[in-house]
Amino acid sequence: MQLARGCELEPLELIGIAVWLVPVMTLAKYILSQASLGEDAFATLVMNVFVVVPLLAAVFAPIHIRRLRRGLRKQLTQQGRT
Image: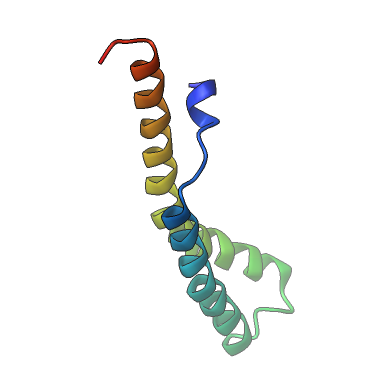
């Protein structure tokens, strides 16, 4: 698994991350400005945990799993198991 994690991200995956990051951060900034939560550190933390983290995980987790599977497939091919 350590070697599989070393597999690089493909350009399409990097683009997907960048494209998803912009609207999520824009949404977070909008929510903080509309609800005046920017001044309350606890409210900001709660908003980040319950809104931003799940939205980011919705894209980052599948990309990470895809990268791991690609790395494992590469290792199996190098070992002659497939």
